[in-house]
Image 1 (cartoon, rainbow, N blue to C red):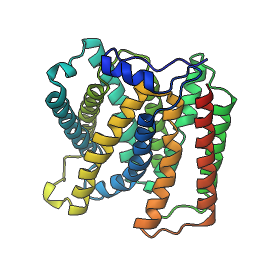
Image 2 (image 1 turned 60 degrees about the horizontal axis):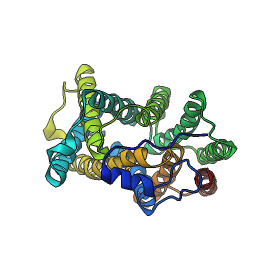
Image 3 (image 1 turned 45 degrees about the vertical axis):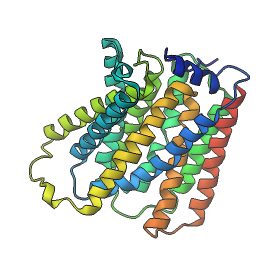
Image 4 (image 1 turned 180 degrees about the vertical axis):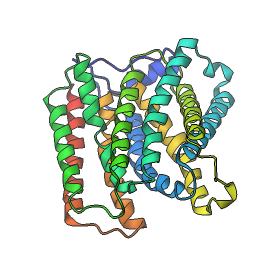
Length: 321
């Protein structure tokens, strides 16, 4: 039997908690959860293309650090303006937990994907990230939970669909270190997602998101400086295309989608939240066809359909639990 999503302690959050599904029988998935999932599904599916454009003329970790620090500061300012400084209060333990989760998610997870996209196509990166639900199921099993045969079957079905998606091959040079880097990032992202529901986090999930982004952004900047990305980099040489993509990632990828994801981690079953990793590759492939005129072949169409079936199986399993 799985554990319910943790309560945040604030009256508003308690009310939201009672409206969304948990692992308790008889709960239904609320409209707010579906809306947040839709944002994560669609927006994060488009960020792979955005990241690929950013790293055309910007260093990977420095650009990621600037993105997350900017988004975190903006989100913190919005919270303080709308709810007062008290909404940002957190104990040392909560701040430490938010920092750890932020480093796992954004430095380890997203940062490594940004680095990998300097060597692998964005579509391939999106496909590789789809392994996240498999790691989540493994983590749940290791910690004594029983996801159920439906969750296992959904993961296998989703991975089978992704295998079909890879049949046509992807254009561009593919380097082994880039592929392994993405896989390492998915492991760290899964650990961060799994941990966030089991360690003391700030009471306000949006404040937690802001702290996570700032911690992850600082981590990315430090790694970028440690790698020497600042040498030979000039702001004047950054293309307008990369600046536009970076702005999109800050506003939509971080402020909107990551905040929705952080809220979902507090409000919905983790295995349901993790289904975004099945949908994002489909969105990425479709955007590649529409924006970059990439060919939509029958393996992509069939693989995408199988992936959606896997998502549906996991969702239906969670609704019954």
